[in-house]
Image 1 (cartoon, rainbow, N blue to C red):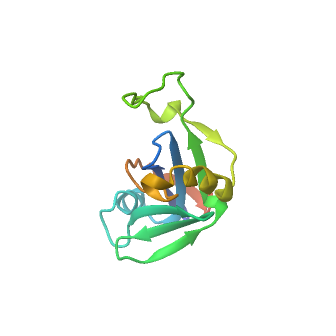
Image 2 (cartoon, helix red, strand yellow):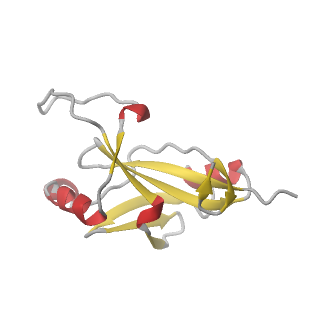
Image 3 (cartoon, rainbow, N blue to C red):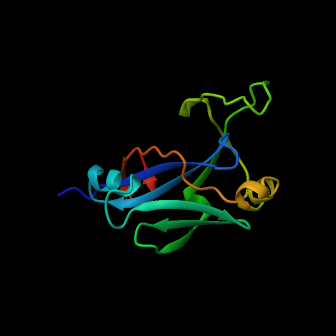
Length: 142
């Protein structure tokens, strides 16, 4: 019997500024179907919301329970500026257009505070993509 497990990765887009995304990793699924169902909100438990509040990242499951996520399971992604500005400008982007950014949750919260009028410094799911990957041990994707 294999001791492999699977990891669900979810990309969460910021409501206030869709140029920012957080990617979370969730380990320990016995098969890719279970990981996909968790990531896409199709089973209980399943991920339904991600919030960034005051330098802390919170994951809410479909049953309403909430858990704080550690920094090592969250990656920050940013869509580079395209040089076009304006209220009517909506860049169309693919996941591959985003670049990973090294930033603390506190720094990201400070940026979110500048958008306080629209979302009060939170990132919530607006777009999600999921890719299960096989892990040989929890927390280690290959």
